[in-house]
Image 1 (cartoon, helix red, strand yellow):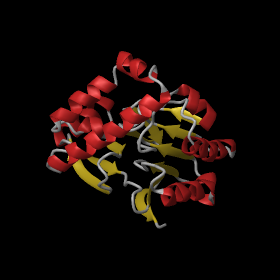
Image 2: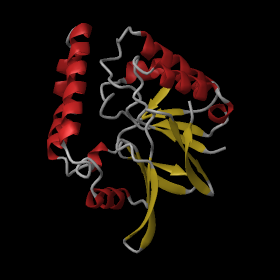
Image 3: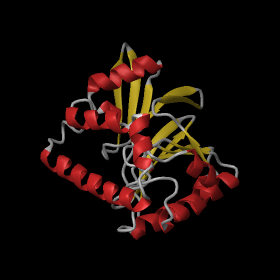
Length: 241
């Protein structure tokens, strides 16, 4: 069976139908018979800490742990919305945490796995914020705040993000071709799989005289989106509500 990749689900109480779809999909035969399930970031709209006592994190943990207990490994790479997710929750949810930029062998072909936001280097303002929030001291200070204060902080961060997106050209928020090439050269691969941009596609292109491929995962705003990677193929498709 293939390995499955999803990203940018942005699960949130405001879109219960997507959470329902996520739970149904993880309980289905395709996931339970897969070689592995990869979640490449932004599983939720906002993560405020592993101690969040809301129902949504508990539902997610039950769904992912059930997959792991069925014998299918579940890999999770934090994105820009859930970079505060830590080992405590990962243990409860049966997740194996991945560093952004890890290389995994997929049926004899190594692939560079990223959330994708680090490749959007034209968005200088975003990259400055990204560097700040990834600093250990910054994360420790946020997690030391009371839970309600973190929830308020996350709400403001989402509003700021929407405002930034509204005034920034779409081309600036997409990946930079040179950044993609540098990342792939540095990892020594000809295949890159990432999310973040919400522009699902399979891009074939030349890289240093070799055939290369960049696969962009789709978001889960209006439907689901899954990448299936098998020894002989890689295909993207939607999951209707």
